Length: 181
Length: 285
Image (cartoon, rainbow over all chains, first blue to last red; front, side):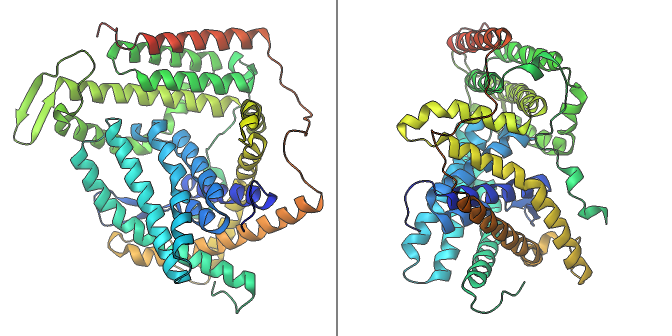
């Protein structure tokens, strides 16, 4: 895990998780309807969080970058047709998630996973909305409203998924009992 | 059952074969053009500059012979959201945006509503900007094959390998990602059918029960990730068994070479973008 540079493992995991991020966006499966004005909570950033947790901050950053490029290329609203809003903030999702996870892993694996998922999601929400305000697409008040109504459901959804996926994979990997899927 | 058929709905980077001037350009030129134009678009906020940029982007679309309707058809589902966002911007943005060298005049003030010349300009310019970038991004993916795009990216990143940026590896990550999308889409379809046949209610999504919806999603997302990881492990093993080593000493079967049209396109767009950035504050309106 503590190897430096680009191993074959890191290249492949980054590629495959980016494919999931693209797939979730392309099939609209990555959007979960929530009871707020924002309409949908996205889970497309979850592969970036998982990549960061499992293979380090470089992989997390790359997955976020590729997810950003695709959300830029596929965007159908003006906000995400701006590369500074669509691509730049996404790079940091996996990076913050990784450092949170590493910092908390000593205390409790599950707590570390939950907090890392929440921090990664917050990074996405806060940075995207900050860039939206800086670039003049949203008034600060509107952005704060969107952040609260959008951010909280997204954090809950991301925590559930990250814990489920990582726990299932680790159990499969170590052979300690079967996964429940 | 048609809810489950994902393969035909994936429109990302759909390559439309053709033999237009834009199709024949070197992928490196197309990526550079995209970057230069994006910089020019990002820096310009005046009406005139954005109209000029829109005309230039439109002329690229005409040159590529890709139907305009095809590019615009992707926007249709998001139209209500675009309109709501534009109205919010128009009504509440107020004085937060003042274009360089102008004064923001109040056009309408009524309670919370505060429309200024600045907010009108913001709405018009973001709409124009959106169209310009939509045309550019669609053109790049519609006229370039995925393998050309990744090799072009790799070639453009290679100068940075001296400062430690792994261009080859990054291009490989991109290629693996694009190659895996259809495989995982197929797998996702199988998982959905399997869970539906066990009685999972995947269609019903209640807004008030998003935690339950998420828990239903777990039944899809977890097997999808696990399957992706298994495939990744296989690929890692296969690559390591063949002693894959990335980096500078690899050679390529297909080498790109600039033609005359490539040089002309590259220089023209570079000069145009530089001029648009240089004169961004001197537009008459």
